[in-house]
Length: 187
Image 1: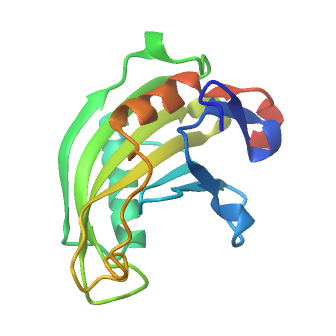
Image 2: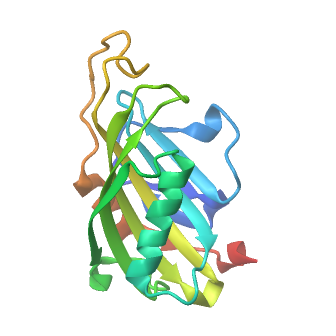
């Protein structure tokens, strides 16, 4: 994929420049309507773009923490996760002008793949764009495994990574290029 080409998300309601070597998971299995899920073709890295319910009654940084804990719960990583930083994201860098505030949370989770016993350490980079006018929190989660347990199915086969890994710079390029084209997606 050309790294300057905008990828259509949610049926064209949004677009963003995606990192190279992405594979759309919806080509392999069913994905909920509020998610777009992509995996790297050569690593266990993934990017998830989600439209979630706006978390009222909490500060923006609390909302970022709430969503991180929700991801930890979905990953069965409760008690095996740590938030390293929660920082405001510079609004001037965003193409998404509808965003009331933006936050970047960095954390770690120990996650098992396919309900295995083996735990892999995954860096979680979570971008939160708050859209209160649409009662929506837009979340972009970059899962970046950094330690693979030797007994994980991810370690089996010893296949060498043949393509460059995604970086935080790729995530930054994605979130800065994100644009809303059809507010009708919010109902």
